[in-house]
Image (cartoon, rainbow, N blue to C red; front, side, top):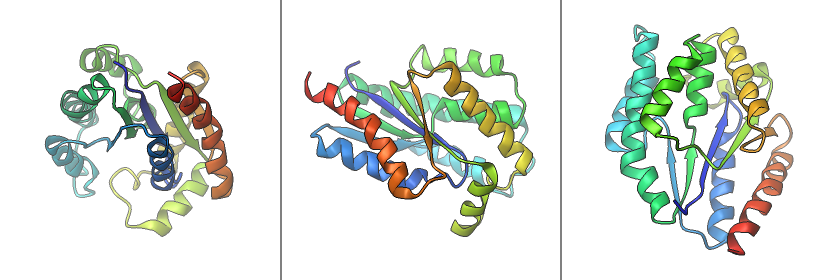
Length: 211
C-alpha cells in the first residue's frame, strides 16, 4: 500500500471536526489525493450501523453487541473504502478508527482489551494507521464544550467516569505507541492546537512530496 492512513481521535468536545477540516486542507494543498471518511460509518451499511449506535433510544444495546457492530461497520469500511484507496495510492483521513474502540468499548465499557485485539486481528489483518493524532483535554472541559454544541448522542450521554476511563485508555495507547500516536493538547486556544498539528504534518508532508 502506497497511500498514507491518518486517523484523528479524541474525546467529546476535543474539536475533531475543526481539526479534521484543517488537516484535509493541508494535505490537499500539498497536491495529495485524499479520501476523508469516518467511523462508525463511511459506507452505506456503516452509516446505518452508526445510526443504531448513536441513537439515544437504543439504551438496551449490550456491550458485546456494540463491540461487534463497531467491527461490522469497520469490516465494510475497510473493504469498500479504506483499503482500495490506500492500494490506489490515495491518502485516507479517518475521523476515529480502532483506537476509539479500545477507548470507548475497552476503557469505557470495560470489555477485555484482548477480545478487542482478537477482532482487530481478524478484521484488519494487520492494517494500522501510519499516523494518529490524539486530541486530548480534561474530560470536564470537553463535556462543557460538547454540551454547547448539540443534543448529546448515545455516547456523549455517558457519565464522567466513563469518559475518564476512555481518556486514560487513549493516553495509554499513546504511551505505548509514541511513533504512531501523537498527543495534541486541545485544551489550548484553537490557533495553538492547529500549530501543534501543523508541526507534525509538516514532517509528514515534506517526506511525501520528496518521494
